[in-house]
Length: 360
Image 1: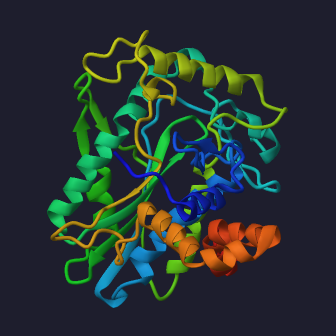
Image 2: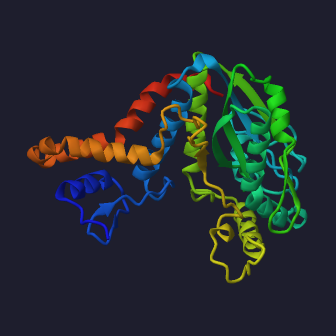
Image 3: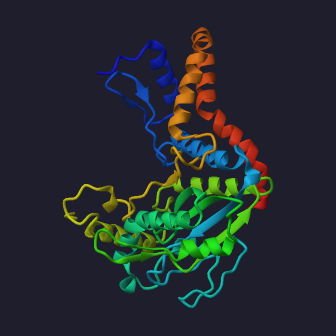
């Protein structure tokens, strides 16, 4: 049986939870953060989530002997499940001719990712690929490590407009065995896996990219790019706003029906299964993850930084400043809550902001 929290511990939890729009009261009476990563649900917790993971991404590049390693940014995409509308993102850009015969502009954003012919689009194939994408990454990870033993990674899974996952991976390999970027890209893209649910072959799409970078050069730019990707995953999958093209809703509804009809496990009964796989377009993977430290491996973070460690450090910071906190009154308490929750995010923003102009 756990001991009841002390007054200081209760104060630490409540201060750290301040700013959360949906705090949760535990059975011990302590208010804690909701922990949502979705910005539209809780901006404070989503920012904390992004800041924590951005710090972990940085620690695997800048907190160790960077001269001993080579770094890469690897992007892997899903295969095609049918033609979709191609719409440029820049306001002044005119894209190539789309499969529908038109040359779209950014003002046609409501059609981005929408199938040209929904009746021929492979919705079941797409949600099944989302379901097995985690397994495919596991096989990819093993394949890379079999060839380059020092391989460590930090991965962000991002939703494409068509409702399918693709991944951005920061890769670190010891310089003594580091391959050329194109060799690493080929090894990753050609990995395959057999679905544990139905045995179908799962593989990456033809579009893949791998760029090598220097930690003492454009490493900060790469971290900014990953931080930008984290901003994407903090949004809901559905489109926000009032001016949403009806075909977008129809596409998302078709994905939801397909996700409800597939099995998430060999013994799954889709109609009654409570798994979130059926609610997330088939996806079951964590949004962000990194290789962990073990007895024989450093893991991605040179310092062993994890979100658990970051939560502990925030709590310890409060406890070490408890006397000042209690003596400072309501105004100081508000200042402390901002410092506890937001200081790391603000620091990262200051460090990464100068890189934004250089990133496409």
